Length: 277
Image (cartoon, rainbow, N blue to C red; front, side, top):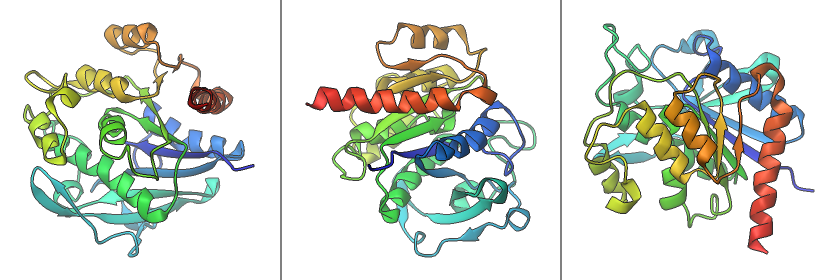
């Protein structure tokens, strides 16, 4: 019997970045799911604050070398990889000199939100999917962690939907309370149109402020499953999950929820196969 393949895409993973609720789940959950018998691949951005020597990152030449167009400009895609020895788990990193070389994560030294975080998110999401294609590895479930991955469901459902690597994949989005102050560039919808998206596809992102709650709800729109990953989510996001007709997983203690997540993936895949019959 073919093993279920789960692709994890996260904005943060410890030990490469400091511990917090999101980074610890993104570190421990893939290991737990792998131990349950599923295949995994794990991706995160290669922020400039990550110490490459300490964590023994190295470039994967055969996967690098592609250019991605963001906001009508070419940006080289560089892929690096490192291992977490205690978990026997590899993590792939999406890198680019323009977006990820600065010695910071999402804010500058004054704590100001980077003005190009929208483009960084676009590049990251597309970079992950293009790299997975190069790996020749077709995931059954794509699990997105954090707002930085919120455009991934859009790309899967409207850009890569006819690609055989992703045509049958189900995308799950985990909402965390690790939000941000401020908004993305108000032109984010216009930038996404360079990839062929239409106004109807981007409803909710155009003509208003694109903040943490807006992005999270936008991800919910295209996701196949919704997960309440923090127990203190904003009320409007909790309400969105509660009122959604999509499969959902309510908050469970991260130290004891691998079984819940594994069964949630199975249920989503089973529901989709029944509908296809």
